[in-house]
Amino acid sequence: MSYEGHEQHFCKNGHLFTEDDWMSRASINVPKCPYCQEESVICNPVDDTNFESYGIIPDFELAKLMISSSYECKCGCPVKHIVPAVYRIPSRDEIEHMRYYQPDDGELIKFIKLKKGK
Image (cartoon, rainbow, N blue to C red; front, side, top):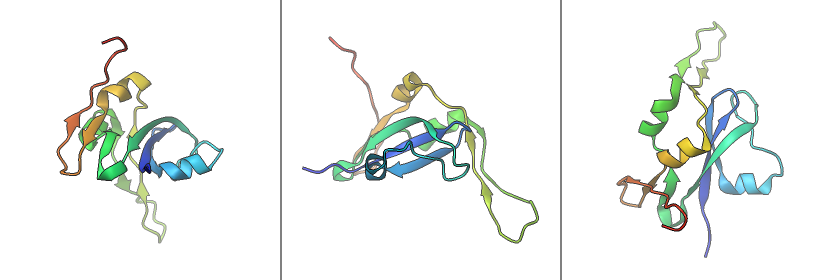
């Protein structure tokens, strides 16, 4: 049996980025944001085994955390580049309430974490 997955990370500057789970496991370093090189401060693991996404935070939940959307920089340099969106960094408890299960058919199902003893 194998495991496939990815991680949704927030850096300390509020940038959202994803990383393949195997890349994170292969490194002893905390993942760094590809936009600003700051370390991840909170991570949401997503199990993608069997083409399912167990624990994913969908875009409509992420939008609730958005402070500013991404935009094309107008700095005047010859290279077109995008300034990434900035998000409020969620707490671990908030993340638990934003997670969904998305089976292979694409339908999102709210992920409910059961309390111990229930």
